[in-house]
Image 1 (cartoon, protein in one colour):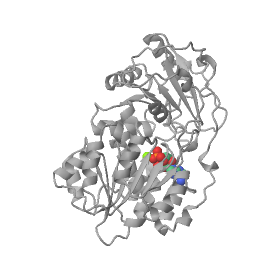
Image 2: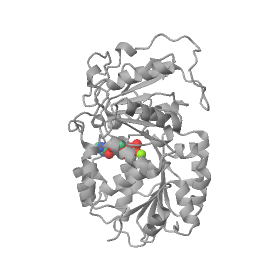
Image 3: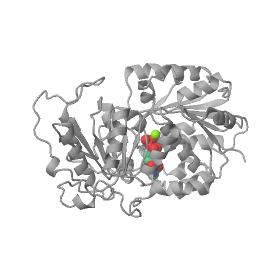
Image 4: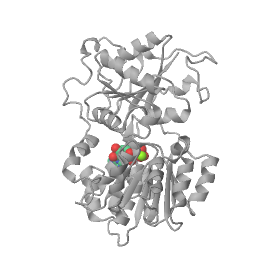
Length: 447
Ligand code: ADP
Ligand code: MG
């Protein structure tokens, strides 16, 4: 009746279960593209995601000693030289989410009972660190800078207080959530929908690449939460379809990335339309002096909650693979993918076109692969992502931007087919595996 962006429970439940399931692979006959013949003779000991110990990744792809100053086969277009050693971690530390001893239980936050019940149903038993440390400040209306890596549970950290605050709203106050990519915005919308089940808190997803007319219509219904990418939000404001006068909570998610992507002008434009008397929450994996300076203008006496540490990728086994030619690189990639341990693999490439080509070539070779990159339309990107999430394909080839912040459960391996440009990109890429404190394995091709 009211909003279609907040789907009713039934239809969402399948996605909910795929989020929490650890054994979603069992049901597909051959998720590995019918490559079983060569699996057994591979020396590859990639680690299946479901077991939490015994990381492999040695054997054939063990790195050879590097000579100082060796150069990669690809010109580094914007990043600095990254030493190959930083792509190696042979002694991953097991840091399960459950091992963090939170100071609070969800029940301690005084959340609405329906909201609490939803968390239990979804399987959120204890808060993650960022949730543990940020939620009570957010509930107390404080401005918060949350420094946390991907996979740390930021969405719930801001979504739960927003739902708590808005579910019984008397005035038309709203929350505005900005995220760097369409997919990330969509994911926030999905999570929020699950948390808000039965609470009549409605949201509108305002992202580029989707029909703007539908979004304009949704906005006329005055949703509680507006989630979007800065470009589209600005467009909607300019068309007078979106007014930010009623925004009382602003969330900037993955702020560092939004700046990287050149959204600062749009963000400033949007913030200029929001009343000063608001609560502002900003989440970022990194904080530089430049970012700090910008945040000083946006937030009001913020509390900083930092849960980043240098363990950010210590739980992910990492190794390099040396290949001297394109042919060798592709041959080695195929050998890896044919191995049964490579259950759900995210491959990163640098260019939109090469990413598509790699996915096409792998498909021709009998693998089940999809591609996700900026040249695809939003429905195409959604379809590819869903196919990967649901296990219809077990390989997703992606560019950095397209994959930013995606929460795909149980990715067993990340492969950097092309090297990342920066250390940050590297951390973000490999953070797609080892989500929610599980182990994971990352490989980076070097020449
Ligand atoms: P981030 O935004 O920091 O990258 P997300 O909010 O996407 O992280 O959370 C990562 C994953 O962890 C998601 O699948 C989410 O459902 C799960 N998760 C978050 N908080 C909890 C929790 N308290 N208990 C169990 N799982 C959680
Ligand atoms: Mg997130």
